[in-house]
Length: 317
Image (cartoon, rainbow, N blue to C red; front, top):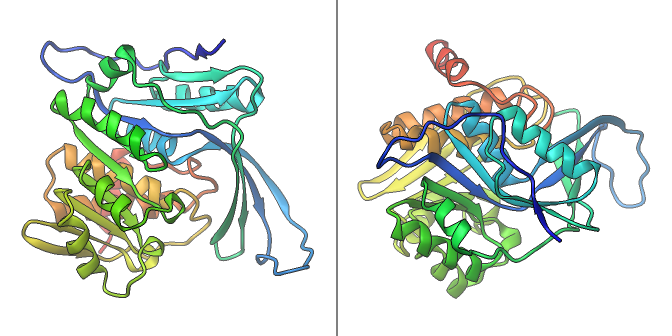
C-alpha cells in the first residue's frame, strides 16, 4: 500500500481568499551520486574518481527547495521508494521547508537515482537510472492541493498528465509552468499541445536545434505561453514576451559544479515573477541565484537565500 510521507517542518500561514502556496512542483524525485574526476572518460577509458556523496535531486524538487530558500511557500508532489534514499529525499525537503504532504512512498520500490560525473571545470555528465516511475492520479485531494497554489511547476514526460494538472490549476486561477527538455522527446504536434497548456515555458539551449534563440523563442511563444525563457549556459538567458526579446548575460564566477544551475535559475525567475519584478530584473535575479549555486557541489549544495542574491547584485555588474 502506498503511503504519504507527511508534512515538512515549515508552518504555513493560511489567509482567507489567498493561495496557501506560492509554488507547488510536480516531478519525479532522484538521489544524485556525485563523483569528481579530472576529465570525463571516453570510450573504453578507465578513470579514478572521488566520491563526493549523495544528494537528493530531481528538477521539481530542486526548484521547490531553491524557491523555498528564496522565501516562497512551496510544496512538492512526487514519489520515492521505501528505502534509505527515499528517506533522504524526505529529510532534505524538510530541511528546506518544502511541504511534503503529497510525497508518495512506494512499497518494494527503489528510489530513482543518477550518477553525476563532474570534471575539473565544473561541467558534468549525468547518467539517469529510473526505478520508480508512476502515473500521477489527479484525484480530489490532489486537485484541492493544486488549487491552493499561485503557480504549479513541472517537467514534461506525460502530456496527458500535464493536461490534467493544467486544467485544475487554471480552473483555480493559478499559473502553469514547465521545463521542456530534449529527453521529453516531443515532436512538433506534441510540443504545440504542451505549449498550449502553459503560461510560462522554460527551455535550455541544448533542447533547441537552432542558432537563433530569439526567433525560436518567438515561435514557441506563438504556440500559447505568455512567456518563454531560454537558458544559454555561460552565455546567459533570454525571455520572450508580448513586447519582444529581453536578453541577459551570465555573471562570471568561479565554477565548482554546474549541477542544478538551471533549476536554481528557474526557481529564482519564478520567485521574481511572482513578486512582480520586471522581466529584466527577474532575469538578473535568476542569473545571480544560478551564479551563486554553482559555487558548491550538488544541485542543492549552495542554494542562495534572497538576501544573498540581493547582496550579490549590489556588487556585480
